[in-house]
Image (cartoon, rainbow, N blue to C red; front, side, top):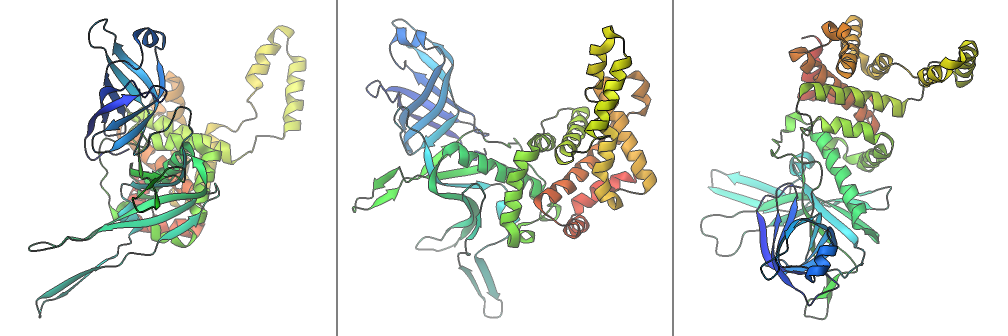
Length: 464
């Protein structure tokens, strides 16, 4: 989670079951969403604190500027218990819900969950700002018309809205007039859903933008509402409380991304008409190929320090993707069983257990054949037949060497610039398959490949 401003606020904090015991503390949220509470005092008596060494679960408080807060999934990182002196504690907090206090044991149900993602304005490409200049008459006008909200029904029972917020200039403008516009996502549900369900959906959408923009972009500015949490506005009207939510969401990169329209894999305009299908396909992919997706994104978010680690993650990711989407085997189950039974029948009794273990996965397709099958749907983009064969051998031999470090394969394994090129090509092949998972047709994928400068450059590594 991106935190663009420092969050360090003083307040008083207490356990929901002991509101009379308020202790001072400082709540800090770092960029990335890591949260700590430094408390001066103890939540309870000394003897109770000694017994309860780890979990506090939920803490509520009142902090400067924000007012009421609820801290979720809390536990002690360290603490100093002073007999007759000042006790201090450093407490890890997983989530902060600012603007509301929940009682002990109360579930957190929401109806809306609004959030932004880095690069969303550029990716969506819709703005209500228009400007006109008349040089001859020395006039210029800037107008704003809020764009129409875009809505998609999701298979999980939620709606995803693409919404807009804006600010207009204040009064007594003398030197500058400024209109700002920003785009954000809003998940809504007529039936209340648990906070974790909204967080899961938001994480999947954020990863979708990472894939589309081809950069690691982070979630930010979360504001939720619940039909269970309302307040009187002083006019006898009940309004939804605005609940700001903070937590260490993924993906996250310390470096803010450089958003480049020309390097995006695809833009919102290319999927707007069938956006609901694309998003639902992406959500469904998390149920079917999540291990492969996790491996792919681990290579994009800087999760691997060394090039060899990145290569292994990509090769394992492609292998896992193929395994999850293709159920083929070397031979039919009946034929394979008959073969195994025949071999076991001729095997010495003392070696049968060993042979059974060796044959357990013998009907699996080899890694090299999986890579060949992964390349096949897009072979026209992956060089000549000779170049493809060389590529498959290079990937296979390098993977086997880096997995087993067999000296016989060392001379056949790629390293340095050659290893980097293999990673770039494998990443590009992965992207074409994920476009297919989203529901893009072959013609649409070909069009993206021809229009995406960054993707085209990746495939040029084959002939380098």
